[in-house]
Length: 228
Image (tube, rainbow, N blue to C red; front, side):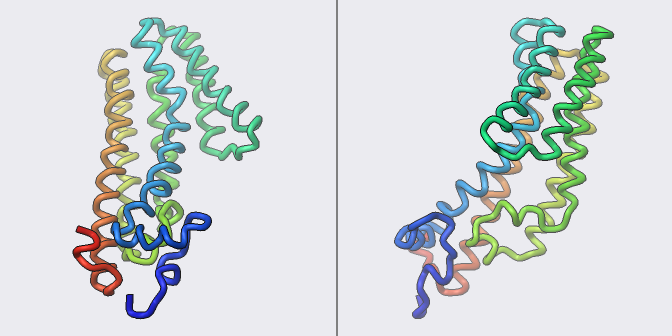
């Protein structure tokens, strides 16, 4: 390693991981990617969509708009209570999600029309897209090994790509909510909205990891045999 310690090249993201960092490097940074890259963004998306997924699940199970709507409203409120009780910060997006589910849910109950709450995920997606337009936001979720070996322009481009995906999904959700049946929308919300994000995460993971491995090989830190 050209006389340079692994701990100097790869800042330790895990307490007491000195020897483990060498194994991370030999695996091309895969271990360093897994927890930071997947867990926090996925938790945030799940939090933002929880009330929608509750509505989808109960609507498909019971075919009852009122029960599904009330449960979605209760799930949104329960999230806030849980975060407060456990001392976790409640960010603006979660408050907005609760406000939307209460407002759109109330209109849905009053007019007995599920399309109002069906449109709610689009507003969330548009709001998330606006946040994702901030340059370099993905860097907050990357482990040190990735930050040091990924070109800034690549990270920035992926950030804008995520914003474009959110806008596309938001527009598509409005179209499905207004033009298709509630059951078709339920499939779209439960499968397409979630699946598209999982696919984007997976694609980004693969591309970022390959780029990090290539950068480490070019610098002489890794050999092809160590990452093969």
